[in-house]
Image 1: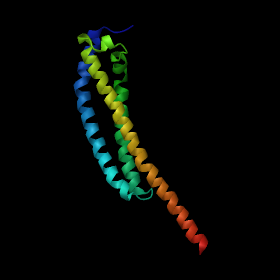
Image 2: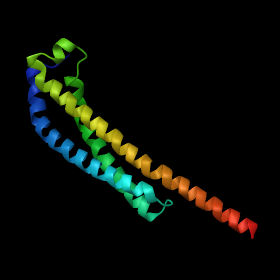
Image 3: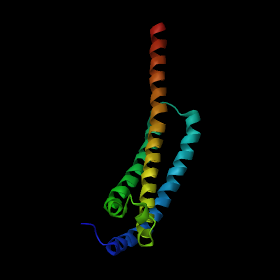
Image 4: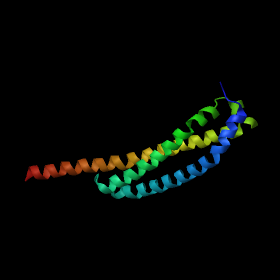
Length: 141
């Protein structure tokens, strides 16, 4: 059974403003972390405490975003439609805009996962290269 549009709109009104603010904050912090990663990539070292701490911050940020997505998943399921006519109808505006906000959360989550991978992959490669270099230096002596 599909809930009546008014019931969905009431639910979305209660969530949409707060969700938009949370999305803006998560986007801000994700962009800030991405800027930090871009500058760190030039000098990223081996996997150690510093990198682990940075990855932990990114994991916490991604976890918060995931929890926000999970909390809004049922509202998104009720508001999403594949029908262009319904998507653009004036009675579906709030639902359409909420769907856009929800998709924004999903994109921010993907970016955050990219930040995690972007820190872990180079630092892991550097760690492996350093181990290999130490083994080679020890083996040649």
